[in-house]
Length: 328
View (cartoon, rainbow, N blue to C red):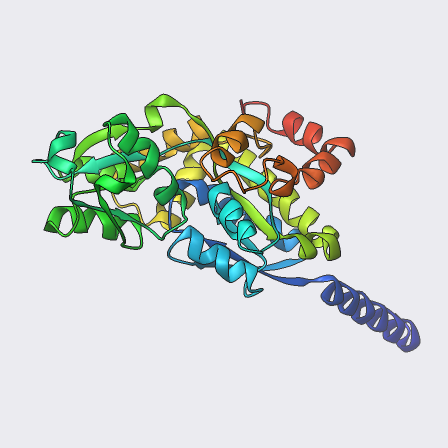
């Protein structure tokens, strides 16, 4: 190759590399804790889907959904893995967050107690642990207590962080009960804790876990978020259709060490995960109904499906359904 042509080729390559770098966006994802509802994002990251979309992603454990939502509202992260309850609570206080995609449209909590706490009378007056106040573990305590004929006034609520820490607190006697989801649910069963109320078995519509952003970020960075959502949906499809690959990623991400717990946690993921991450209206309505009357009853004040609608309109969702036909 002539020197001039070689120089031009190198210059062209450098210009292309510079352009690609200019399009790459740093993107921070907060997760509530290492649970199976994060699998779509772990898979998208492991499969290189975020990189392919020009996203330099960092996944950060925020040790609690509502705490992470507060960090999101403060602008410290770009998207948060959290349920709609935190969105409604923070928006009520002046934030402007939007739930843009769902990772679970049903409650996945089981309410566990110490082996000697098997009735409402045993629980009354005791302490109940939640991850953080305002989180889904906090919001759904009301439902679990109602199944026992109790109210929040009948117990003392305490923040205890991750699901693992909460079941350890039950074991030590620091609290009498707590609600956890997979893989911590299986760990609680293995340790002999008592499933006082199984909300997961009821399949209650609930925007239990999803992707949440600030509305002004959504308005200003729609392209970045559309690329993020596109990659996450494909990660979800891979996780739903390639069991071996999904279990490898789930075991690493959630620090699962036994085959039994891994099998249960993956089956639970498949049961609850909507392939296209589309939220259900009933799930939003059920959460909003838990709040006082001064809270807006308009779902659009909390949920924005415009990115998903755009991916449906441009054929992306149909193409993924065709590419991964086994995902149901």
